[in-house]
Length: 467
Picture 1 (cartoon, rainbow, N blue to C red):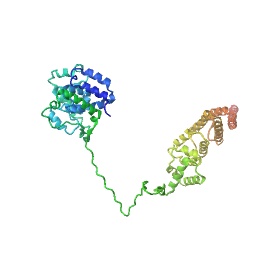
Picture 2 (cartoon, rainbow, N blue to C red):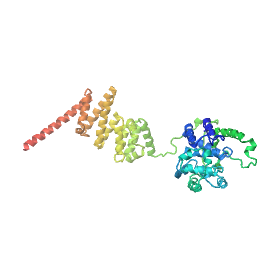
Picture 3 (cartoon, rainbow, N blue to C red):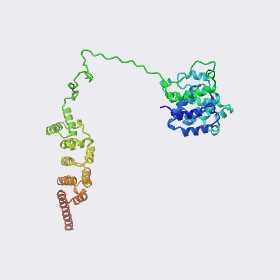
Picture 4 (cartoon, rainbow, N blue to C red):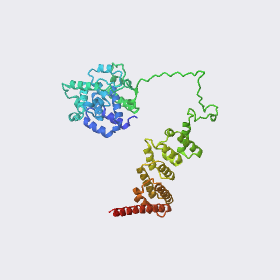
């Protein structure tokens, strides 16, 4: 994505050869830059500035390069210790090389090629890296900075920052990335007559340079690189011998009736009884199967109880099997009694929607095995809550009848101790006393309550006689 025309104009105004040295201080440049350019565009702006920096003809004077270095630091401010993590840290490394000729020779394989800079420019970069909030420095214009006397010990600071950068940067960059070259490069032939002489002087150069920069940035040249590409040989085709099968692929663009081709779903499948029962179970999850198919599954489960572990039954699939084929689900759960996941299956039964089939499964399980008391209590409470919360009168009446008959069955078969749920079930019966099955359950509870009172009276009389 290229820079917008407004961003390009702002950069060109900053870098105008006639005014960039004295019109604005670094602090004013920073304020205007942050106000006009969004942070999301910083990387594209940085690449654009790098393109200008790499081509000396586009930024021929020191004041322009000082502004570019300053904007690099302002876009991604970091302290000296973490300067190697800066997106444009290789630029700083190239700048701080003391010998410009050696810099180009060492960096000829990298796309971070920077034209040699002056001592003032290197010192300026070091001061920014050391303290990017240097107020004395920020209040100066680029021309004012170029007129100050440089400190005598600036070489020590340059060497310190250079060593820090050199030891960390290229260890993190893959060798292939280091081989990228910019899409725009300088002409290696030196012009003995000078660039200004050929095109008619500095004024003509400034106008032409602006047009060139606008065209380069609008075409997004700064994000294009020349890089080596992998050359991979096409592997030879394997030739089939006479004794090998040839794969037939029907092509729609040929005069072949593709309806003659059919895929065998049973291809590569084992013909064992496990596979046959597994296919029947897959059907049982998605709908009711006929009596003959049910009998086949139940017969094989009785013959080999361990078969239940190979049928793909999981707690998540149990609700489907309960609703579509409750008799098979009952048989499977009875075979899973000793399984470590039995608790998960019971928890799913509690959480699934109440229905005739789910109650049938729980009722059959309760008469065939000893279910945890907590599970039965929780299941009954869930059923009662479902009846209370159902808004549809017809559906509510049906649920109440089912729950009433279900609880009566559990009480008569002595599966539950009604004392633990007496108050909750009694409240349920009173709320739905207009329904025949709920009234019958209430009469059963009264009989149980009277029996307990008779037992208590007998115990009292026995105590008195003993005294």
